[in-house]
View 1 (cartoon, rainbow, N blue to C red):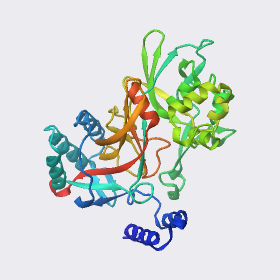
View 2: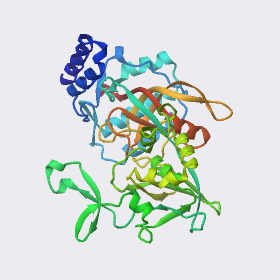
View 3: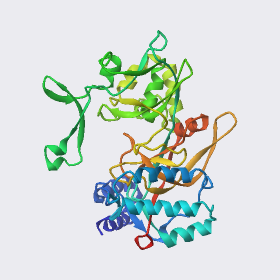
View 4: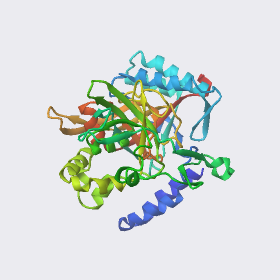
Length: 409
């Protein structure tokens, strides 16, 4: 009721005031919106407001994504509760929901059959988005490939660190109920819990040399920085072996975007911002790398895995089918549907245009920069197209969730 009232108030504000005051009105509307919680991050919508369901990949690899979510759900208690807006469902119900959908898509249904199936069997929810009206910013990430060595050389001298032994996680809820769900990353110094080292101390001052295991040594610090942003990747060693490195922990410091920094400093135009443009700027200005990187105090530590890449659920991510969302707001392993855009790339690897990207995905990951109901990160896999798509994707869109109707289970 309160969320509906907020939308009505905002609509009438827009109608009642002149366009010249639009910025003020947008700010006023924001005041009526509640802070995002699992209960208000999404709301159930009727068929009239539902999207035209279709899959631009023709259901390719969707079953693989569903199996990953089922793998996670089957190793947790069946009674665990998942929040879909104001509705609650058990893990057992989540399993039935995904299995039912998996069986259906094996028939490669037509658009009309898909619409009828969803309307008859599933509840549909829409994320409130970043503005309360469903607008979601979609970005992308991928699995980079780095060249590395087991031991350092004058050329390969930048470390990829494992989680340091002195890094600790403090569960604040153990001290007071008012801190329920809150944790901090820290270390102990002089019998006092203090914040863990930031990027400047780790990279510029070398405080972890000899104190943390180095998984590999690489020659380009820019590669390591972007590996940390992606959260996982592969490192090909000089002996031909390939290491799968996966996010293990962070230093607990806030993430600050160097892309935003470069825009604010007028070094890269906002309209041209991409991962590729950042790399190009850093290559052209190597003397600025340290200062720019230290603007982001967040630092990521890795662990080795036999396979990968793995998402936050511990299951292998499926390219084009796995998304990273805010784990505090959205149900993990859930079936979702996205409406956004993807790039068309020519033979030279350049983006010619953008086209519709409408597909079913699964919520299998999260990220330090993925906060709130208006952010989503789509995993593109590895390779040239994946790097291009992940580096340039900053598209508006919509995010929906599907769950089997209780009476159908």
